[in-house]
Length: 68
Image (cartoon, rainbow, N blue to C red; front, top):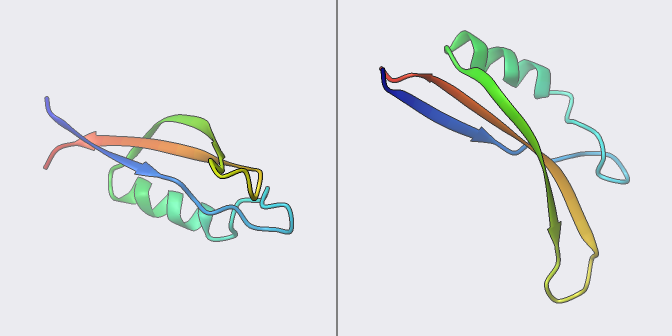
């Protein structure tokens, strides 16, 4: 069996950038209809190397499906 993979990093919303976009549920359901299976979710912490802007965090969604 061969698989293909997809990575999704949604842009967080809200004043503190800590909320999922309202369209996230729709997008996840659409991926499921296309045969994608969620296999992992991890957090990602990005820091500004110049020192301005502090840090930014997000979630990373990993999907797989049988290769067509």
